[in-house]
Length: 182
Image (cartoon, rainbow, N blue to C red; front, top):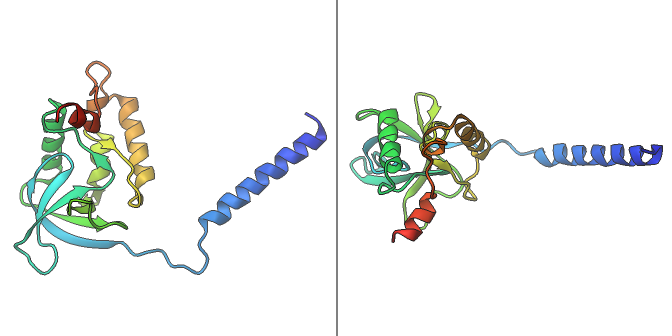
């Protein structure tokens, strides 16, 4: 390469790097504090949905919670849907409290609460993805843990876990399955 092209490439690389670094900085703004609430799980509905007690001022009100960033196989999508539900049940345990962490959008279009679910310092959304029980699906604006969930999915695929098992993979995404079997 000529000296002029090398200089131009170095200058371009430096400009991109500085833009990237400065773009990530938010001068004068404090990091947004995560809103969290501790609740008791009354029932695991599926590999991505819980029913919980203790949200708001009504401790006996049951609320549906959808895990952010994941899409579990449909329960009719055998054997993966049932496995995802059972794995989430085992991660939560019997009548154990969990912590819900909220992102930007608090509810989905059908009124379910959207949350990241934490138990004993573990992000259960991430754990389910990493073990290959559910898919990571990014849905804006709730993208706080997308990089973690993306890495977890890459790990599950690489290791051939559950739905990524090369000998018996899940052939349709949950969305494709629901569309095909409505």
